[in-house]
Length: 328
Image 1 (cartoon, helix red, strand yellow):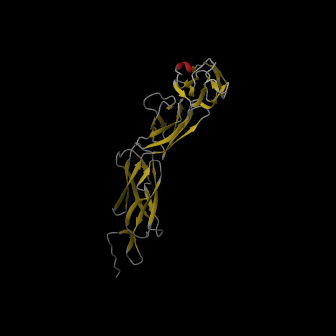
Image 2 (cartoon, rainbow, N blue to C red; image 1 turned 90 degrees about the horizontal axis):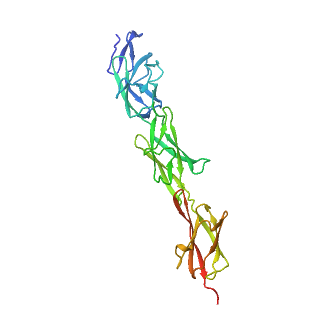
Image 3 (cartoon, rainbow, N blue to C red; image 1 turned 30 degrees about the vertical axis):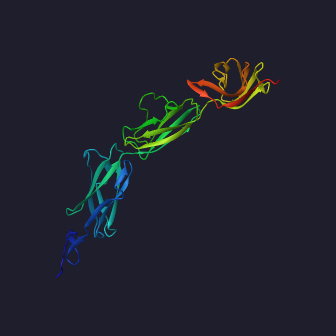
C-alpha cells in the first residue's frame, strides 16, 4: 500500500505517479522585488520563490495595483509567470514603471495554484534634482545653466524654481518675474536657463539655487568679476610734483572707461576742486593721461579713478601722490 501525504505548503497536481500517488508540487514561499523604492521610469526585477523545484510546469498569475489610484497604471508586469519543472525554486519577472508626480505605492501579488497569495509593496518616487551647473557663453557676461534630475520627468513636465543670492550682480535672462524657473519636459531629465551678469564694483560671489518640486535644493556658485578701474602706477611731470605752477598727472592701469571715468585726488586742502573730470583727460589703453593739475598745497595725497557703469559706481584702488613744496 502506498501512503500519500499532504502538508500546508504543498498542493496536488492532477495525474497519478508510478506509485499511484498524484504529483506533489512545491509551495510558494514569497514574492519579492530587488528594490523597495524606485524612481518612476526605472525597471526592476521581481522574484517568486518556491520551497523546492517544481515537479511540473506551474503557471503563477501576477497582479499589479496602484494603491493610490487603482485605475491609473504606473507599473506593468506579465499577467502570468511560468515556473518550469525541475529547473529552479526561483522564477523572475520584469517590472516596468512610469514617471510619476508624487510618491505612489504599488502592490504586486502572485496567486499560487491552490489559493495561496503572496504580495509585496513597491514605492514609485518622482524624480529629484541631482545637479546644477553653469558655463559661460560667447556673449560677455552671459551664462547657460543646466539642471539635471535623477530620472525622467512625468507627462506634463516638471518645474525647477531658481533664485539668485544677488540679482543685481547676476539675474535670470528674459525672466524678469518674481519666480524664475527651469522647465524639464516630460520624458527628459534636463532643463536649461540663462544668467546675465551685471557690472559690480568688486569681485562678487553669487549663489544660484535650484529647488525641485520635492523641495530639494542644490546650488552653483558664480564669481562675477569686477570691471572697476585698476591703477597700476601714478607719475607726474615735472617729477617730483611741486606746489608751484601745477603739474601733469599720468595714471597707468586698466578697465578705464573713457566716457565716464574721472581722476580724484584726495588729501589735505584738496576738496572737490582736485577732481579732474572727463574732458580734461586724454585716454588710451591701458594708460590714462590727465591734464594739468592746478597748484595745490604740499602734502601726501592719494589718487583714485572713479567711473559709473550701467548705474553702478566703480572706484579703483588708491595710489600715493606726494606734492612737494618748491625748493628754495
